[in-house]
Image (tube, rainbow, N blue to C red):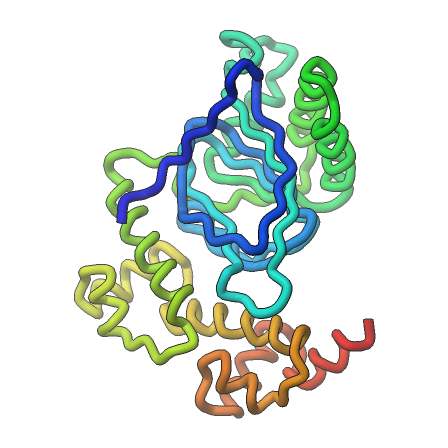
Length: 284
């Protein structure tokens, strides 16, 4: 499976600003030469950025540098998976050759370098950026340009960020690995409720089981069993929120075959037992 390269058409526009809504997110792991700033207003699931995987939630704000593999995915979750987000995509020279090389934009230039790893922001800066991004959706291009510079300047000065991937953009030396991880991710997202043996997933990766274990830990920072448990617990959380099922039913529905093990793994990840989580969620 080749890494998908998204083609972004700007036409006569300097950059792309779009507000998107769709039933769920199953876009493949992909790259493009533009920077991408994305604000999640509604949706939750798994976020993949280079060799980084984490949960995402409404309010998440991320900046991805050019040709950094990334995607958001929630097709595997139960219940309401509707996506509502604002996306801004732009070339570094969208405002003119070497525009951001000027001394006045040195902070933004540093931001661009950091974004090669992918950045996730938190705290007050997210609310400030959200307001400006919503304004950009309705603004004419001159006003939107002013907002874009303001947002980048705002993010460049914020200490409330996390670098996501140890990899940066795709090069010839890592493209093969990225394609392999794409195959692994999508196979597990489609099959995590089943008993996918180590031999089976190693075959998907075209590796021996021992080589697969080393490879998978290196690229996800988790063991194979930890990764699968993460997917299953995420799915279980959705079932506990959306459906009136017993904990035992949910245990088997999300792929566990032992209720004691399910309870331990659930509490390890959420700090609550499944029943506590269900009762707590239904209070709101």
